[in-house]
Length: 447
Image 1 (cartoon, rainbow, N blue to C red):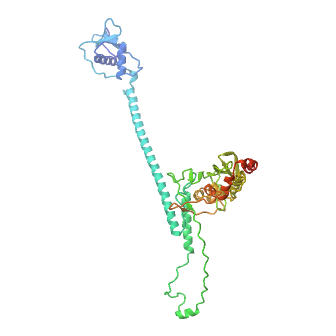
Image 2 (image 1 turned 180 degrees about the vertical axis):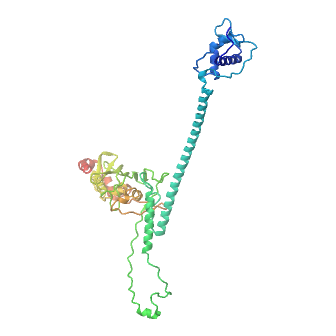
Image 3 (image 1 turned 30 degrees about the vertical axis):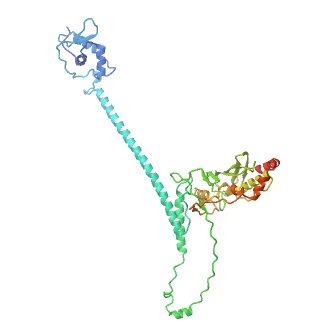
């Protein structure tokens, strides 16, 4: 018989095996007992096991708690009427540290702490993201309120001083900032101060005594020199009011493209170049400007076609181009918008072999550069202050349906179609004149 002394490691294995056999109430193989121990968490997976040896030694003792089942190798069952104590020791020495704390418990507690920390960090991150979104919305609202207050202040200052303020639709282009609004406020304030300084002092009432002379009024009248009569000043003519059509804006106060203004459609305002030749006294020529307009076709003057107007950066200055959608092979280009417009009008007359269209150049109007709404947007773009020679224009908001009217026959195709010269030319046009003058027309387009 085996010795009655049991080592602590074997005692731990036997107690654990007795617990499993008590729960299952059937004989089990030592490998099955080991699996149940792993599933219950009493031992770690992959732990070197001495369960079989401990059970074999226990089954040979007189006071055995586990017996071997006869005829079945490695199968063990509980001995009857044997109390099963609770496990008080660790399964193996490999799972117990030197101070008696289980390594499994140590790592599990660390895992629980890390899991709790990660959960708290996730909630904190979500709270920070929500706060950032809330603050961004608040910043956008404050910016909109600031722009609204600036516009109202500019309008009030302009109304008090008789100066037409910049309209709300003249917001900066997509590449500009809110600086033009603050600059316009400063300009208006400066003009108000200048006018206050230049204003004459208030006249004294007739009943008030003369503070300079202390003599009686009769002597003062005798000694006072005769006052020369003031000549009546010539009345100045009324300035032409230029109305700005309100256009749709986005949430940031910038214009939404394309901008449709009757027969004119603007797709891009371009960028202002602070160079010589890129502006005149009345119009700025931004590079990259693009617009379209309906006008008489060169190939068939009886119908209309869409012309695309563009401004490019040339070698010696801006280059202006006109191209028709029914004649993409030929592009009219020139160094000024008036010259470009003149080539187009001469090409139409050449195709009809008749002076149907008067050669009255309005290039800036045809391109849309001098349209009040577009010009107001351009002069508030970055770099407009640096354009030398350009005179700052003043506009008014269109009210009660008032808007800018294009009255030039060479710009507005509706007015051109009502002229007598164009009506006679269309009536006499049979299409052969364009074939006969194709050589001269090609020369005009490629000149």
